[in-house]
Amino acid sequence: MVGIIPAYSVVLDIEKKDWPKLTSLIKEFSKDQGLRYFDGSQESKSLSMLYLSACSQKGLWLHADKRNWNFEGQEDHSPLPLMVSVHIYSNNLEWKHIPKDIDVLLKNTWPDSVNAEHSYQSTLKNSLL
Image (cartoon, rainbow, N blue to C red; front, side):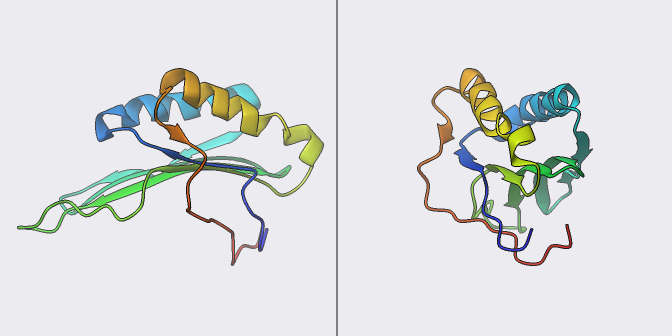
């Protein structure tokens, strides 16, 4: 997957209170698509992190990632937006519907919060997949 650019990449401008809803949507979407689902989200005094992923060894990786840092005595620090990305690295025909399906799901849930016209770039530089 080295150098693979996402088949789908959006900024999802939602509040932290909506993270559980996104978690449920991604979990259910993963189940419906036969993907393995993982939730690596964390909550601590200094970090609120949403990290969801779904994958198939047959060539697909979907993930949502957002981190809010909180350093004592300072305002929350959140340098990057919540990103939702899909990487297809094998069996392109089998997965070609996934980017559109996840886009429809997100836009139906948060119609004014999905931005595909962003300036953030994402590639996988060091992957053994």
